[in-house]
Length: 92
Image 1 (cartoon, one colour):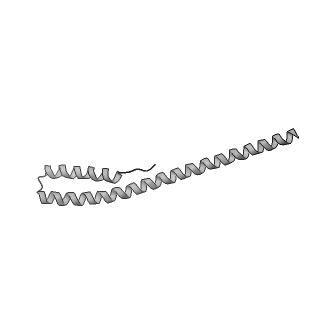
Image 2: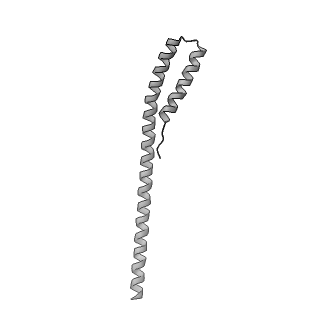
Image 3: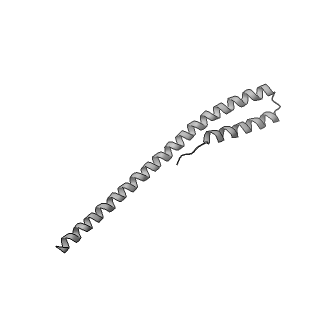
């Protein structure tokens, strides 16, 4: 499972917060645009890093689950082969 758009969601939430604060504080348009640009770029980078870390964690967890499932299937296969061998010996 991969998460997408974490960086975009984080960036947009930060942009909305900065926009509201800027309007309430009566920032000039130039200051608003500069602040908004810096915040959007910063939170896009932070969101991309977080998204990469979360996706790596999900990949590792999925891989561990697959390995565990394969190990369980191998054990079942060995048990079934052992039972089949026992049945063959008793029939002879």
